[in-house]
Length: 279
Image (cartoon, rainbow, N blue to C red; front, top):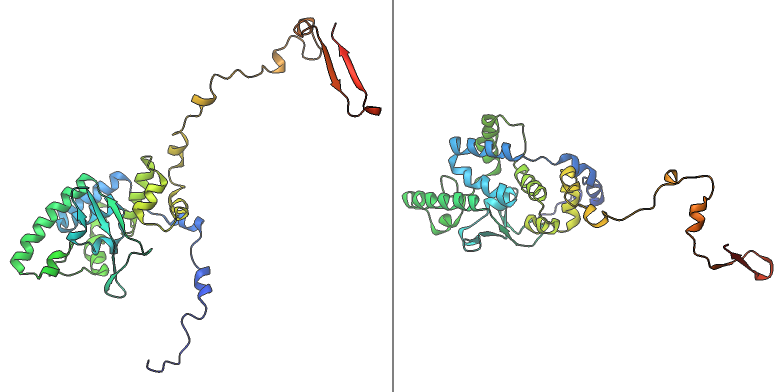
């Protein structure tokens, strides 16, 4: 519109496509919280930043991305079915609401503990909104800041996330690790990979398998017991158990029925048939 004459930033997109992480790289980069670590972090949040406890529990309990949890509204909550409708995300770069990453909305099942924390949080926000005279649009946000607006990622990271990790004495992880933790816990508990894919909102099941399929392999190896199918089948005894491994014993000869065996010899001249009679 204004006569820009600089280089085209999209002239060589294949360079950026080539820089995408491989499946092996995604496996190395996955960071997640073990259940005990997550409980420690939540306890620290309840003591230091109680306003954000429900937010963390929704991210841990539903696998939501930070922007998806930030963009939640009260109308997205289905209390009867214990689930939340994820249909938008907050774009930090654009400063606006946008559709989800893969362009498809999804319903995410939340555990009872996360729903209870969310209900208590919304009741507190109702009181805060009444005192501060928030607008109906501000009251609709599930996780507003103290002035009824969206919290910026940098503010959350510096004032909430990093202090909580320091207080809980946990190694550094990004907030996205809460989403990785949800997927890991689900797969460890035996959840179907297709269900986890739908809950996470991945575009394909290959993305889910490539990111989380390598985690806790030992626990998955012993989940299926094929001995219930193959056990009890009588196999042929090894040759070392026979009375004469180098020759044929008289007892073995007696085991053959006294009948004539016809063996067709395809290598004989004229296609003759070799007849063998057991005595």
